[in-house]
Length: 396
Image 1 (tube, one colour):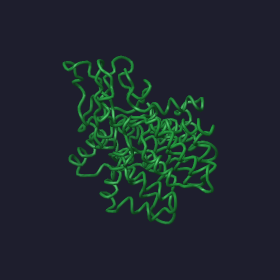
Image 2 (cartoon, rainbow, N blue to C red):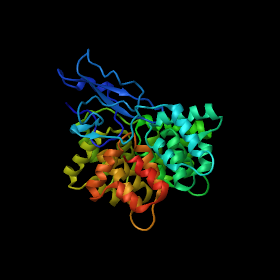
Image 3 (cartoon, rainbow, N blue to C red):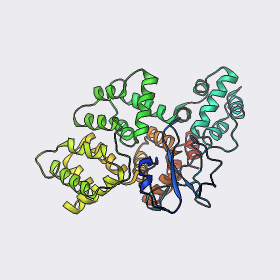
């Protein structure tokens, strides 16, 4: 089957305008948008013919399996035949009322049944957790979040509450926290805004407005400055081309302009980098990076490192690495969060919670390949208690 999604990119990309590019005869690949109830996810459905449909698939259902039959039926098709795979799918025997009762029992009386809480939160998709929240409120006239706040603590509590948010809401809260009060956590802004697809960006902006009655772009402008502000505002426009076409002539032109804006001139013209890195589709960017290396015999990452520094360098490198290999980027972020003295627990929470239904299984595989050890073992050796149990459960 001809691959139709850029290799290494977790959320599957919208291809409606590119269906004409798929050769026939052969399976018709129908791209279905599964709604941001919680975030964005794109997956492919292979329709063998007009009379055979995947009757179990529902539009807007995050847990719908790709009908690639056999051992790969739970994988999501990506470019060059490679697959990206989540660790959490819709629980097939789901009952919101039963889960609400279990959670109430786990939090009732003396002591807390953390095992029951972990079992439910780590085995339900985000939209199912939303249903459990609503059912809990209906049955017990209490917000599940407030109940868990009273029962849990520390990073275990933070992770549990993150799982009760829709991903776009969780991202919005993380962005607000990164900019609220004295100082700004630019790395969080970069990690979130430079790795999300257009629909995710739009949903995050909407959630930010709804939750905080503030405009995300205005807050980013007021909390950042200079070239970093410009690239973050560029990605906030959610105007990236999400097609699959590769224009070889444009790739060569962009590569030449990137060189002339960076290594080929005194100083750096960040505007050229902004336009290319924030606007071009991921297939096009890969072609541009290859053209740059062919033109100058140097990797684009090395050029960025030599021409920029600080947070701007981090933003540009994040955009480049996500275009090249999104799962590899997140595997590296997880490794860096655990190496050396101390652990960046909030980075672990943020990545694991937001990637479980997109590509966390593939991230696990990348981590194993790059660092020659399992992500689960790395987490087990770095953190402890119920926090560790919940994070490891998300990796199942």
